[in-house]
Length: 179
Image (cartoon, rainbow, N blue to C red):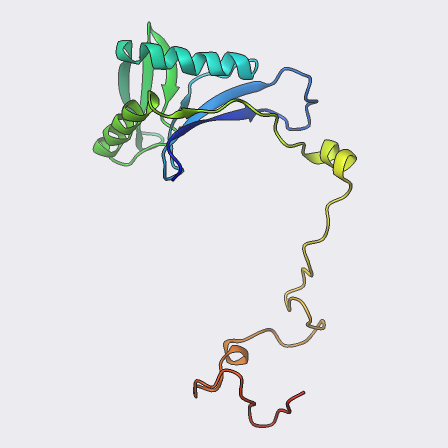
């Protein structure tokens, strides 16, 4: 079973060369793959980001939480501060204060036990990916009829799949021939 873990997220343009410094942040996700919280700031690389996670784990007992609500956005959020500096924030807004508090509790319970993977290089995208792997392959026909249908042919309907309601599955229908 997959356990809670920290994920590294590269922010900014994916076309940036791998050697260049990139803006990196972290997200803490639960075993159900839902985001529990994220870094409040970005870091200049994976090493700095990982160090910030380790520091957060060491200092979590010194943290102070701030619950906020905004009339404009109409939701509740939380922010975690250590020594007056925001270190983590909620990944989304919550409709109810109790939901926000519950999510923050999940974040606190998980931050010290979550897996901390070693960073890996992101897969290239855009022009870099085309240079390395060539043009993308077609995933199949994109016309509405789908594979094997001629343009202008009737679309697939539910009656094409059923077996006439007799449960035969492989039997011929009236008016068709076995090939």
